[in-house]
Image (cartoon, rainbow, N blue to C red; front, side, top):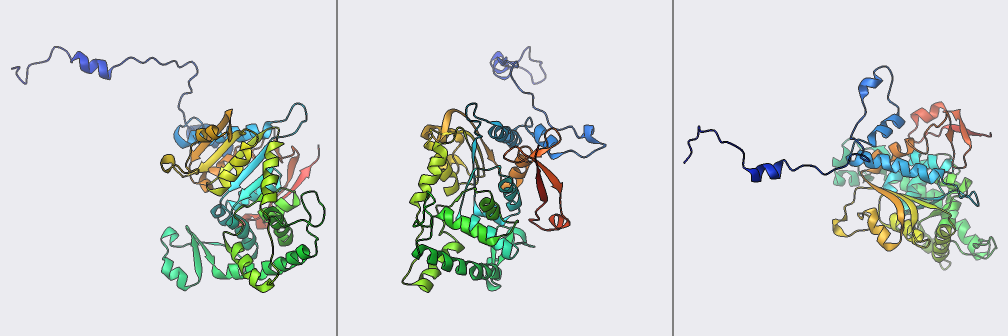
Length: 397
């Protein structure tokens, strides 16, 4: 037996072969991992666009954010060579994102016609309207605020956000007279059908357009959707406070009932996809907003580009958690299309994506969804309000 102090002549070849296995790897097309060098910015602030550019080579979810920016810019740059038609861009988001300050980012996209169509939940409708009537607040206790204590005070918690019950009372006072008018228009045959003829039915998108018109507030996403004729689809329109208002309205208006047709809307969103020369999907969150957009894209054999931002995982088989490649198997993303999933919370990731794409200064200007140059200065209110709207004009070239 060898002495403990006796030197070995060589390491076992079995071990060295395993540990020191030679690489068979070509670096010709490889991207080197790199981050932002803050030493190169000692005399000026780093811009968000510069940060996002450097994130693309950091790895992990930073690289996914960079990929998302690249795909959004491809959606924006597309022009059909025959018709000059731009890509149809679908935006989906869940209600909590409108409850949050991300609402102002979404409003910016709609205000400047960067989006072709929207799919959201009932909360994504009502929370936008309610915030025009009364504010939402940050919780001092964060996510740990006591549910029982809040309930006793008539305050509702959304994560680390607080919504007083009085906000919903204000919403009821505002929306019920509108529902009364809509019912009268329905019974009088004044509602337009899909071809603009009288005698049609209300649909979720028509209801939402009407509410956007009635709110008449530039802080509102739905107001700008109405102004810019961007359809907002909500197949689960009754699943929230708006559904509560519709429920109570059935007793107020009995025996007459407001009727809302979902079939006309499914035809409308599917035909948007069918007629699109190219289609992009940007989906924040999961559930009905994700599937409704992707199922519409199925009608054209899939979207060309997809950007998905959520925290869901695929191990439970959920649509929210699925990686983009699963959608390829269903025909909801084209074979050969490009898509990325950012595993992250949208209030963190999406402002970065927008800063690197829709709101990016290129050649000294920022353009709206129609290619026109945006000019103007912010008002003082825009700096202090949670959803303050910058006064922006469109400059004709």
